[in-house]
Length: 212
Image 1 (cartoon, rainbow, N blue to C red):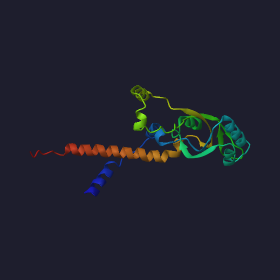
Image 2: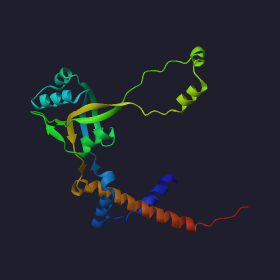
Image 3: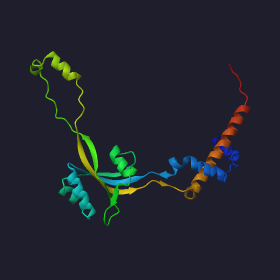
Image 4: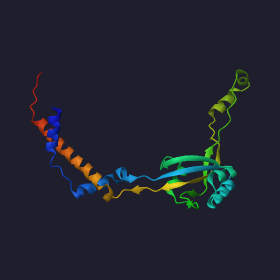
């Protein structure tokens, strides 16, 4: 029975066809979600405690230095970010990689290097001393109430960050490149619409017997 039903659906949708206008409309409506390759980057993050160290590192890289050697010589900490896309990094780094052109080409390399970025990071506070019964008795009720009510802002420090990597801009696949794919998807939609219309017609024509 299922084979017969499938054959019937294929038969009623045999006349499905597309027009150039159908294809263009589908492409335009789905260009961002289906036919756009998002920007990406293969990048390293190098952190420095001072701007001077970051500047020295950047200048040495532009003169042809090797990343690991130059970073180590200037106290930099290298983090391999791997392949990243827009929106996957902290705001400052994401904007630098995908929202600006503040990068310079490195000699004899496809990689580029960013300007120095100043990123604020939270400083981890040392663990507070455990309150024992003995120390608790030394505090007054007023002191404890004041301590509990206080909400201090976390301490932050500036970290000087340089990004090194290869950036690939967003790419929109042209209509000519995806025409076959678009045509097949639109044709499937047309067939589905014809099949659904036929099924609804059949259901409407089938008498419903009330057995209650």
